[in-house]
Image (tube, rainbow, N blue to C red; front, top):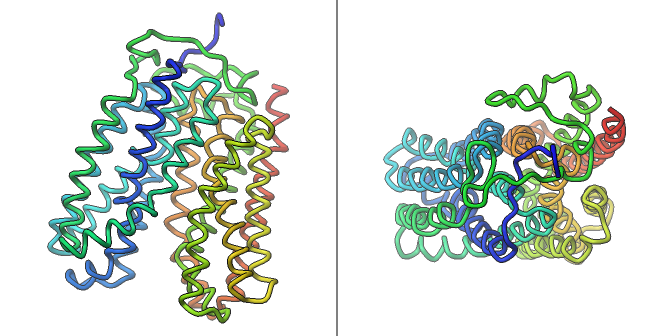
Length: 432
């Protein structure tokens, strides 16, 4: 296509399948140590280092905040040079972070370890993987993105029991040391050897630059400014209409509110269920349903990909989240109703991960996909980091778990309204 902007470098289907598998495996091995392991290790860490639970998890929240702060810069770099250097460097940084945590003698080194871990998150987790696969998957972008999230959905399933077993054998320091080696022996080779290299102009270094038609949606009718080294001009450029800026803000607010909901439920679900009369055993059963249903929800996208648009999938995911929270607050407490809630909530949350990546591509195109996704990530991870403290503050103010659950329902409704508002602005952008 003559005159199309460069930046999307399609690769052969067989090589694409290998890239999807490599990124998927790396997602499991990245999410596990950087996000899930602390849920198992924190009592031992707090006990040995003399730290409070609030401090241990507060620093993990700081790492999520660092992730959000770095996300736009990481996205811009991937847009320019591809994901190989970023994701491989992230694996090395994750190994350094794990090594620092393994040797932490006090709070200072513990904090430094998690700050570096947050930087590693911004370079190795879903958003950089989505930006990377977007450059090489062409029309198969949606299925490729969904396949990567299917792998990532098993991170907790693999790493919670693995962490527990390793801790029993090696102690928490040994666990972090093993996970440092995993970053170097598994993630680094996958990122460095399987991700295609790109030249500084956005072409595949092996196959040369290939022009690609922008993804269907808003960006297809509005040429984006080409200012080398100044991607922030994309946001200030007069060609980017005010309606587009508001579309992005509403979309970002929507996913930030989703992140608030997810983070709050992850931290407080068992307590909320027990406050409604469930035993701890039943509460754990309910909570255990969410993970598998996240994977099931992502499988739904594979089945319906040819019949439901990405934005239609987004509406469905938002409504599913609202329905789940509504059932939680209005139905009588019990194991059965809890499982129904968890099934709906898990499916909705599993789809949200896909929808975030697909919505950005659909509404803003894929030439500067990393930049837009990084901007969105700044909102999402900042809210994700703040949510446990904000929700805990709500409870500390005297609001019980019952009313707090109503607040989460309100957050889900607000997220849905913001998402719908963003979609309403999309046709106005097409007109420019």
